[in-house]
Image (cartoon, rainbow, N blue to C red; front, side, top):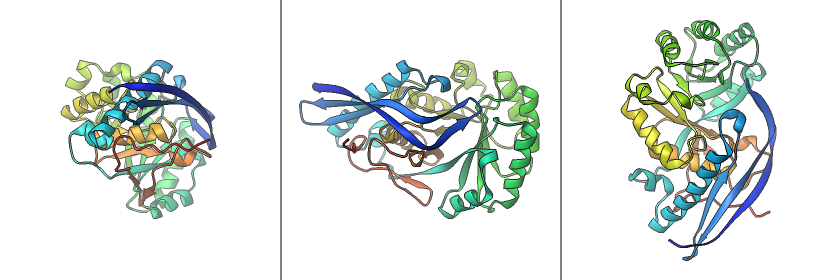
Length: 318
């Protein structure tokens, strides 16, 4: 395929509310769209949105955008949705997603119930940003009032030492916890294995990609990994990582890095290709006050994937 034009289109998108974690916060997302045009009249898109404080370097985000734009063109040329091109399987039309709520101390029971009424079954809360005792109390308060079908997915963003993580996990006994991401500030396989052995739910690594060596897959210390393709430098590397994890009995979840809709669609196609039955962290478009393109609808807690060839990103004209 011959590329006849390429250009980068910078964006700065305001959020409706700050994105807060134990590692910091921001209220605007900056990045660039990459547009490639082929000699046969096709247009491919990629999204480059570095976030160094969360382990997404400019180099890896750029590689993600460049590869995505090329794969978009290739899948269009093949007449396949990107997820079907990646997997070799029939296209996936929708994915179950969790709803994101930010810090646990700022979340109300009413908001969780509203999400349940909208069809979400797993709700994600950030922990590790406040005193441990306050967050445990809030967790118990929320859990008491949850509809029975709801479960909570928690993310500590590497906030705790081992003793704190141990205490938090012990306090989760009997609660509807679906998983806990990145509990340790300084994770090692041995420490994670010790924590996982005491937890009734899977622990997950996300930003701790330095742990992903051969030993990790031979003797998995946790039950789940979270894949952000911008962190791993692209969709193909992420597919390889997901297949390796699943072969080792590790659950795979795909989440966005709060990219614009262009990047979100790429993450969704990846999720559909590698783990179509999992619950993914892709309900992030509603955090934006504005966006780069038409956002995929979420109906009954399921993200509706476009069924056209390639990425099917529809850019909004400035």
